[in-house]
Length: 303
Image 1 (tube, rainbow, N blue to C red):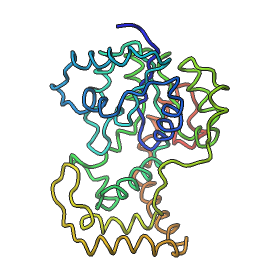
Image 2 (image 1 turned 90 degrees about the horizontal axis):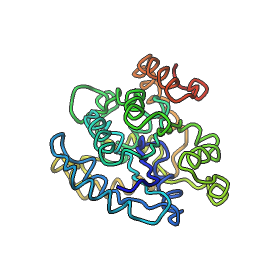
Image 3 (image 1 turned 135 degrees about the horizontal axis):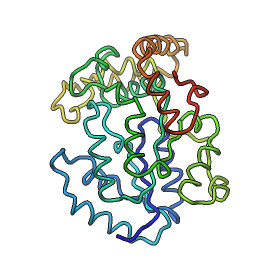
Image 4 (image 1 turned 90 degrees about the vertical axis):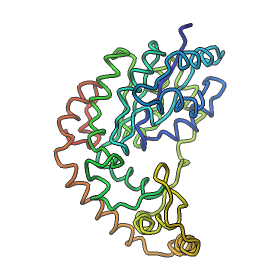
């Protein structure tokens, strides 16, 4: 297989992944060839532990590496595993990627865990969820959120072992939040692109994936079983058309709700997460700081 500039962007979810995919990899399609996400899922993510068909995955890679674009990108937040399914897959996915693409460069974006837990829970409510926060974190159900999947040093160390430390770039999401130009400059340098030529053409002010107000998400938790016709992989729900209409009206009504309602709900969630995360990630963050050469304490991580 011809050696080529290959980037494996693993996520994590809720770390600006959509921005990178839409405003960087897709926007500069004269530079990047984006491997379709359904193909990534089919050949690298979805197969169960003994279902990986290495020959078919190698053929897929050979097909896409034949492009004349400068960089071939495999980008999917699910490549870092499935935190909502107790993260059973991340090591298998890493082994599959290394088997097919051993010369690739790796990009991993992490996020301070308390912020990540809040954002993940809110996304869960936005999509389909009906658990309260305690139930969402409750082990050992197979569909509960794996808090230990946010001990980042395990995944980072494993990718460094497979691909080499110099091939693995890990950046905190907080750098993107505070200084997106520097964040993007580091990514460009990692894949041998001239940063100034890229960054000057990027718009960092426009948000991607606007969310619902926090308290409205708290309300949606009660609506979800009745406004969705089915949960993914979970069968039928109790779909009721009039309740769906009531949810639509609630969204419109919420625009005139005082912002204090949102602040109160968000404060409650943050307080519970603070208790849940207390001392859980300190040692992992210390090890992660060493592995990536970045002092995570200055970005608010518990170290």
